[in-house]
Amino acid sequence: MFKYQFRWDTVWNSFDFLMGGLQMTLIISAITLVLAMLGGLVIALLDMSRFRALRWTGITFGEIIRNTPILVQLLWVYYVLPIVFGVRIEALVALIIGLAVYQASFISEVYRSGIQSVPKGHREAAQVLGLSPLQGFTRIVLPQAIRMTLPPLASNFVQLIKFSSLGAVISVSEITRRGMELSATNFRPLETFTFIAVVYFFICWPLAMVIRFWERRLQAQ
Image 1 (cartoon, helix red, strand yellow):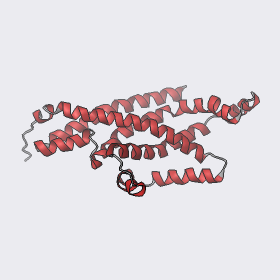
Image 2 (cartoon, helix red, strand yellow; image 1 turned 120 degrees about the vertical axis):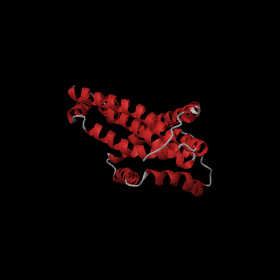
Image 3 (cartoon, helix red, strand yellow; image 1 turned 135 degrees about the vertical axis):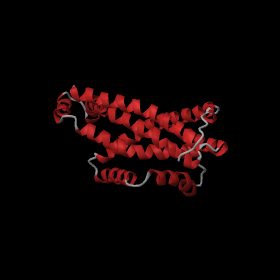
Image 4 (tube, one colour; image 1 turned 45 degrees about the horizontal axis):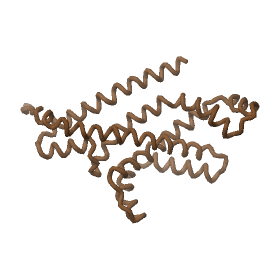
């Protein structure tokens, strides 16, 4: 029969310590999302380039990143890049780079589908108005594409919050890493990691519900 004496006071006594890790988690997720959005746009433009070399560069890069485990990529950035370039990379920087590159490869597909979903007639109308291809893209196509890709981009933010826990592997002091450190000192992993799981749930679940509602509103329009 299961017999266990819960000691939730060990968690409450370290509440500020864990919340400091949560703050780091949210900061990492926000910074990574911005970088991934920029990187995803670059990859999407390469994928749709009329120049074969650029197109194949974007496609190959995206396929490699999407089809290898994110943890392996993270360890590669942290351990291999310093060997290749001869410079030391901080764990936090390695985590941001690894997550940004990984998410950028998926966000590029979101951008590409959003851009391609803009009616061809809108592009032709931009040409009739005398706009250059660049002006037509930035003024006509991109604003419409961004509007349609906002819910998926928000979903990527939720994914980043969860993926940021991988930083614990390379000692980034986010909430999961702090939970590992705390459980090593209080010997209460059940209470510690249950609390952390609940924290993740009450951050990610409301965001996921809002995103679903947002998507239904856009579909209705």
